[in-house]
Structures are given as C-alpha cells and as structure tokens.
View 1 (cartoon, rainbow, N blue to C red):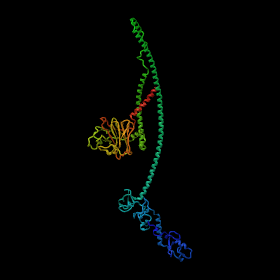
View 2 (tube, helix red, strand yellow):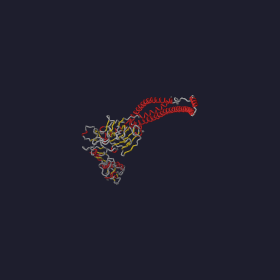
View 3 (cartoon, helix red, strand yellow):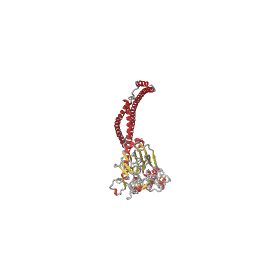
Length: 597
C-alpha cells in the first residue's frame, strides 16, 4: 500500500520553528519554508530579517506570501497521512479493498457507481475529485458481484416486498410493486425483530409464571394426596380393626360351641359305653343260660332274664347339638352374599363411572397442557391406563391387503384363516402366510390398539412400513420394515428382531395391546389382562407411513381356527378384578354382620 512517506519524507513537511506540519507555508528568498505565523513571530521586533536555518539576512520590509502550490502538497500529505494511519489489514469476514495489491486492507466504503470497494487510501480520489464526489458511497458490501443486477450492472439496492427479492433502480418489471431501499427494509425488519424478541420474552416470562403456578398447584395436590391417603388408611384401618375384633369374637364363639359339642359328645360316648357294658353282661348271662342242660331250669332262667329288660335308651333321635345352627348360618350367609353382591355391583358401577369421569377430566387436562410426555416415568399399570385413554385409535382390517382365503367379518373387525398356503400369482396379496394390514396408516404421533387372541394357539402381530404393502414375501425383521411378535403352538412366543428373541411369558395372553410412538421409534406389546409388558422394539427407523399388521397364524393340527378380533380399549377394571374385589368385600362384610348377630 502506498503511503505518504513513499513520495516525500515527513520531515520535509515540518516547520523547523514549531516542528509541526506546515500551516499556511511561505517561502523566503533563501528557499526555506516556514509557517507564515511562525516566521512572522520570529522576525517580530528585529531590525533585520534572518533565516533561522541558514542565517541569510534580508531587508526588514520583505513581504511574505503563502506558497499556494506547496500548500496543496502539504494538505494532500495531511490527508494521506491520516488515511494511512487508519488503514488496517482486512480480517476474515471483512470486505477487502478491490484496489490494494498484495496485502488487502479493510474496505472503508463501497461505490455504487464504480461497483468497487475502497480502503481509506484508495477512497481519497472520491473525496477530492469533483466528478467522483457525485458517486454514491455506502457501507462496505460483501460479495459485490452477487449484489449487482445482471441486467443493468447496478447495485441491487432496493427490496421488492411483493417478490421478496432485491432489485436495482432500473428493473422495470418491479416498478408496479412495493419497492423500498434495502437498507430501509433491513432497519424496519430489524426493529420488528426486536419487538418480536420482546414479545417472545414476555411469553417466556408468562410461561415461567405458569410453570411456577402449576408447581405450586402440584405441591398442593401432593399435600391433598397425602391427606387423602392418610384419611383412607385411617378409615380402612378402623374398618379392618373392627372386622378383626368381630372376627376374633366370632372365632371365640365358634370355638366355644365346638368345645360344648365335644363335651356333649364325651358324655354321650360314656353313656353309650356304659350301656354297651351292661349289654355285654347280658350277652354273658345268655351264654350261661344256653349251657343249662336241665330243660325246666333253662326255661325258668330264660323267662326270668326276659322279664327284666336292659337298662338302655333309644339313641335314634339323639345327636350332637349345633348342626341345625350351622345350617341356618350357611343359609343366612348365602342370602347375605346375594344381597351384598347386587348392592356392591351397583356401588361398583357408580364408582367406576365416577373414576372414569375423573380420569377423562385429568386426561383432557393432560392433553391441553402437554404435561405427560415421558410415559417411561410412569408405573406399568398407570402407563397402560394413560396410553389406553389418550392414544387408542379405531382400527379395522383392510380387505384389499388380504388374501382371498382369509375370512373377514362384515364390520372388518374379525379375521380368520381358511387355509394357510396360497396359490401363487395373485397381485397385491400376501401369498405365503395369512397376513393382513390395518386400513389406516400412521406417519406421526402415538397410537394404540388391542387385539383379542383368546382361543388361538398361534398368531402374528405388529406394525410394518407402507412399502411392505403388496409384497408377496418378505423377511420379518426391522431391517426390512417389520416389527412383529408371534406365538406358535400356544407355548413359544418370539420377537422377530434382527435376531429372534424368545420371550418368557407367565401366561399366554388373551388380549394384546400394541402401542407405537412414531417420533421415539418405539413399538411395545402388552398383555392387557395382566397389565404387563411383553416386549418393546426401540430405536425403530420407520422413515415412512406404517400400518398395523396381523396374521391369524398357521394351521396347527386344525385347532387354530379362532379369529383375531379388534377390540375397543376401555380403561376400566376387568371383570375378574371386579369380581375378586367384590368377593373380598363380601367376605369381610358377611363376617362383620355375622359377628354382630
């Protein structure tokens, strides 16, 4: 980069009196230059003028005139020195000067007429030359070639609001559009951005307050929960203690009656043993009589024996007391159980309706506030209830995806296999096993459905990618877009992962729930009746729409003919659970009433 010192030494522009750059320089006859004010002050009050450098003497009446040519040189030197002090090398990301050779200095301005960017040194002509002063300068522009109109070779300094693009002043196709200077639009949008930031910040603060409020409500709910649990424990503890006390009394009464029966039995046994002893004596006496040889004596002895009857009682109507009481208690218990069963069924229905309403209200609140998103934190039983309430979808079989040998019900809710092997050559059908897809596919969110598999010894359930549709055969694993579990021979349950996984089941499920979280890549299978997780595929790469997948299973010695049934998921206690609960309550209350009576 050229600088002031490239042309003249800086010392040549310094006054030897004030040692500063010349101001209004004048030349004296000896050829030396000084500031006009400096030399005038130096000669003031002297009888003879003398050069401060060479001591040459002049007449006192010498008239000083400004050297206009040298003055312009000095002024240019001042500008160049100022510019050279402000020139700095361009850093990465800064606009470089288009005129600098070698090391590029940072551009100070961009000329919209010359279509070039200049550092402060090379910008000097635009500040000095009259013709260049009329050029329009702007802040340095990056990628100037991309900011020039290809049609008119002008800077794209305007912004078209209709087409959301930059244009130049000569682009006639945009004249009827709403165009404004790009810088003006930038400033306006920047102002709007700041306003938007303020609005978003206010929204954040509002939500932070809401979070705090919800946390406080949750804390209050926690306290209410603890109080409710404590009250429930107290009530049930009181009831249990009362039942236990009455049960103890009942047990005491029963044991006392048993002891009384034992005492009665002991007395009766002794009496019977005594009579048996007497009868044994009579047998002995009869034996003695039978051995009498004298006929007359024999007759007299026998007549005498027969005239005295044995001292015995009639035992046919005698029994241990208490049996009638036990039978009456049994009949009373049966009547009581029937009455309590009806009453508890009514109360249970009302209780379930109340719980369902509360659960629906809670679920609606959850859906609105999106507070339950991480199902993994919930216990399995509660998790399955939440899943059934929030994500259950209505699934039907798609007849178009099934082989003709599959038998569908009219409502497309049941499917069974007529025969497991198909003839080849049927397009758009599965021809190896009896597979069928759900009619509706899913490409986002969560969904859940249930399938009744009772009375079946084999079945396949899961989800598959849309690309599986219409394929005659495919390998059942996640790499091929299939996430399936299967049951065979009513004993062996397998997850068809990239390698088959044998599943250990305590009981063979009669109702299987399938839950899919598309975004998390999760497919889970549940035994609905026992509320247990059978298996989960994780990290699934769906990549496209997925469909529910079903197979009634292969024929296994002709005993796998029951259908697969799509059932509606209802979040309520099972009848078995209800009956078990009712039975327990009936037993407790029956014991309680029996003790009281």
